[in-house]
Length: 208
Image 1 (cartoon, rainbow, N blue to C red):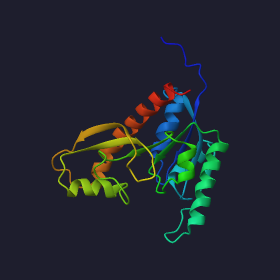
Image 2 (cartoon, rainbow, N blue to C red):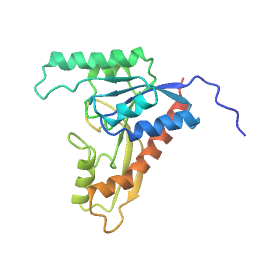
Image 3 (cartoon, helix red, strand yellow):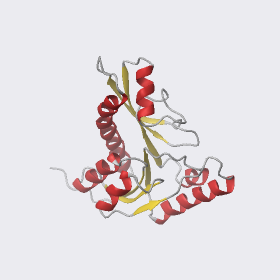
Image 4 (cartoon, one colour):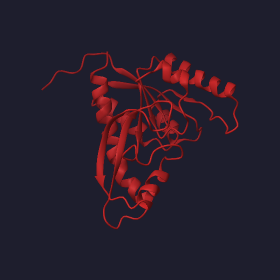
């Protein structure tokens, strides 16, 4: 039996806009000791997101950062970016994970956490990535293209949607007869959970 990991736990910030399944998965892994980390804060751009509710139920600090409107000024976008970077620093964040976070990460945050921001995407990037490609939109596009395989990708976040360096992927067969994006999402999600946790375990193990 291996001894328990005596190193300080890595501090994670989870950014999510949706129901919070990744938040629940990572929190459970931390609590069970499968991941030598702690969730320092959960941040969302939606006050009603399930991610915030998941965190609140577990007494994890939460924060809300409003989405910039489509006609937001550069000044407002910069202010929101600086707000996020400052917030992440205040929680002494080691790793930032975006999981269904529907808000682009700005240059101040990217520079402050270079090679420390990871994203999970529900396709085999570079296919079916980019602006507007999230959630069921991705799965709908995969099916419309007649693909026989799909998967999930964990990658570093950079200034362009879904174009950061790929860290790891999982490749899945699409069952014959599967027609709905909802059904495809249900098949891919458990693989997303497993893949993201595997990558985080490796990153945390190599954490300074």
